[in-house]
Image 1 (cartoon, rainbow, N blue to C red):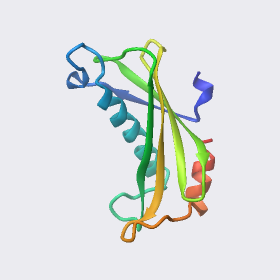
Image 2 (cartoon, helix red, strand yellow):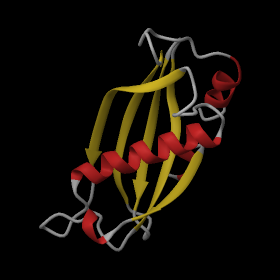
Image 3 (spheres, rainbow, N blue to C red):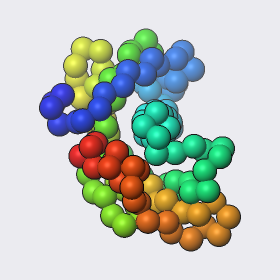
Image 4 (cartoon, rainbow, N blue to C red):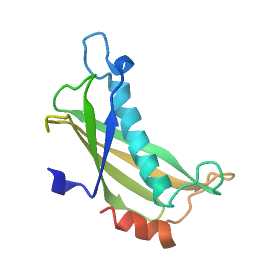
Length: 135
């Protein structure tokens, strides 16, 4: 399982992440996925959300729930690039509970666009090289 993803990051769940059934609320899975993807982009020089002329917009999200998780779990999140196009990238995510159980898989498609015009921008140079390294 750990070999399936190029990057791993731990995320600590919070008390208010649980729903009324004691499970991690479905919106939290989306938030964790969004956080891990954007943190990786920022830390690898692929995105400056406040200063870049190019931004990444979410175009598609897909989620599959395999088991339950909830507070107080530490979630290990695996990240990889599943598909890299001219101006978009599909990030694939796997989430494991602290006991190693895979409880969630999903993907997240980012389209890179010009901040002002919202027109697609080609993924090139250092950004493309960094994303290729996440395959």
